[in-house]
Length: 337
Ligand SMILES: NC(=O)c1ccc[n+]([C@@H]2O[C@H](COP(=O)([O-])OP(=O)(O)OC[C@H]3O[C@@H](n4cnc5c(N)ncnc54)[C@H](OP(=O)(O)O)[C@@H]3O)[C@@H](O)[C@H]2O)c1
Image (cartoon, rainbow, N blue to C red):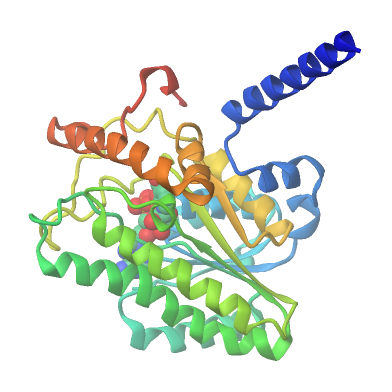
């Protein structure tokens, strides 16, 4: 009998160890990884959809345009810089399964809320419908509370929060009329976990998360409308160089070495799986960030302890002139080119 018990315990330990090894290699929450393994494929679900992507001129939004164009989705590409959007459009036409008529370049400033209604009408006139709105455009922050001008906090709320809410409110009546659509918002780990140097950014992303959780419940009568929050950890993009510093007029400029961050293509692939499977909230990040998100969700006391250690290192990194997220633990540092 004792031997049976011992064998059972050993089997349990082996199983736990295997689970731990898998978790340490995970780069997204377990529901999303399950959907990637067993769920619906973006190749089947997203073809022919009309997708409006904000922040499509660089980083995650740009890569999203490339991957969606390969799926044969019709695209509306929005951001402020028209020439960058034209560049993205050209690459979509070169490498994707789309024709010129399938892509609309629509310059848009998210902070200019009075333009959002007209922009929405333009999209509807062009394509007749909006299947997916991807609220992706936004900026981050690298400055301490004591050093940042009040305008920095205002700008982050105007852009990341109010700009996104405004565009969503313009598109929503159309989705309600059709009783279908997906509203996908690129939030951030900073919408779950608070970090130093990004207090205004964290506030704007926490606000977005609260807003979309409420909206999802308000839309309970419309099961065909899916509200998805995507929370990435560090991903390769221009987000650090575009981050607001102490003044609203000055971006950080030097993003530093980004090669240790998750590849943009991997993050976007996981975003497509989220859309194809109608997941409501996903976390996309490598370790140790993923672990921290789980701790915040399930063990907040431990999370406070570990976040204060990581936060101290984050400020030290920033003050020594490297990217704040460049390295917390050497053994977790892995290059992605
Ligand atoms: N990369 C990360 O590590 C990371 C992690 C978590 C969350 N995110 C989120 O991912 C989203 C995309 O960021 P990214 O990493 O791809 O950074 P990025 O390379 O800097 O791209 C940001 C995009 O937002 C657009 N944008 C900025 N201000 C705008 C405005 N006023 N109106 C309209 N568009 C505006 C930019 O275009 P224009 O300058 O041409 O307007 C650009 O296309 C952001 O919401 C960010 O918070 C990023």
